[in-house]
Amino acid sequence: MDDLGYGDVQPFNSESKIKTPHLSQLAQDGMIFTDAHTSSSVCTPTRYGIMTGRYNWRSGLKSWVLGGSSQALIPKERSTVANVLKNNNYTTGFIGKWHLGWNWSTKDTAYRTDDSLIKRIDYDHIDFTKKISHSPNDLGFDYAFGHSGSLDMPPYVYVENEITTDKVDSIGSSPSINNWNRDGPIADNFIFDEVTPHFFEKAADFISESSKKNKPFFLYLPIPAPHAPIVPTSEWVGKSGLNLYADFVMQMDHHVGELVSKIDELGITENTMIVFTSDNGCWWIADFDFLESKGHSPSGIFRGEKADIFEGGHRVPFIVKWPKKIKKGSVSDETICTTDFYATCADIVAMKMQDNEGEDSFSMVPLFDQSTAQNFKRENTIHHSGQGYFSIRKDNYKFIFFKGGGGYGNREVKNLDELPKFQLYDLEKDPAETNNLYGQYPDLEKELIATFKNVVSNGRSTVGKVQKNMTTSTIGSKRSWNPLAVFDPER
Image 1 (cartoon, rainbow, N blue to C red):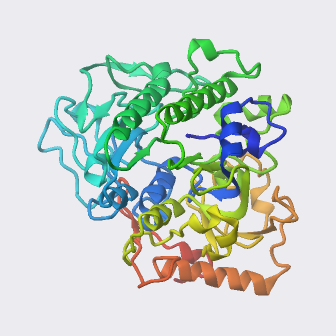
Image 2 (cartoon, rainbow, N blue to C red):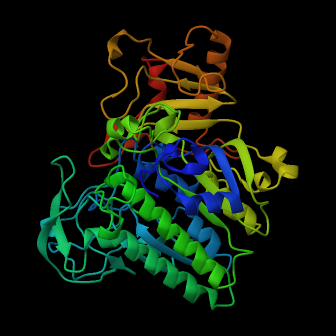
């Protein structure tokens, strides 16, 4: 899901005021992970990590996200989770929000950009009658149907297997939220409140057709809800008794239930693994103040929101159902990261990963059974904020290499200039990150800094040959990047 908070899902927040019965049932039928994290607290980089098993900041994207007309971020030569499964006889499909860039065809051949940069193409130069390139189909997906960016990012068009599905000859605008929207090209068949249900319908069709084949299938289904624009369909408006965001979450929960029922109906439940999660924490546009006044916290007990380095930015709901392998009602408190999906899939198909793939991915398969949980190998996790600030998590300690939240204006940090330059929290005793211990444990701080430096310098956090990070930001224009300068300004 997109911008769904940890506290928005009832299995993770007993005080949640948003009803999510289908996700509660999914949790009862599978395993919940209480300490799951995205590799970034914003969406494009998290998606990069899911697809590649590599921390997003090793790529040319050092902060924030791509736009709807941005060129492709993942090189064709880099293996994705779709490649892993396709190469092991799976039918692979993508349906939903891509937001990893693809290359639109342009009307003017002179409008070519430097191949070493990832730029946004001006809408006037896009030729929607021609196929896109460097698409999901080039990155391991047999079938691809989706929208290029977030639902509030033009161009507002569906692309199916590299071809737009309808003519694009007008300008439209995303529905306004707090007097904010984006104008851009829109296709005749792109209707904002129908996008989420349409993706779920396409997903049901893909699963039905794939189940008829004598081979396994993989569907990557990144739904754009409940991200802005917050557009529940008319029958869901008002259902929550709270606001449109809560209505939208309830609608999303309903569609998840329908899809799970489709899997049951097809008789493939026993050996189908369903993974449910979010790409980062809840965004302020959900109206935190109003929801909190009604007793609902989108981040649960945690501090922060989407884009923050605090837990509310990157700790997410994470549910896995796999009846053949996972005991009903299971709970794992191990720290996992969304980059771990790559190694998990490689493990399932017994594929040995090469040194230049899944550099930050650890198989979650051992965690699916309590008797093998001790074999899970992740020892530390790097977090990354929207602005590009870092923290490292090891055991119950989290060390933030910045004085604030590193997201949208530091909503919860009013006196930034007066704060210590770093933050250290004991999440076991202080999950809300209110008591900064920085300076009290110098040996621990030295150890965590050394570990962080190694993870950065080695180009990986897994065992293997040293790999290279991109040392410049290549989004729009080239800028040097040195995450270790915060410790040594002379580097």
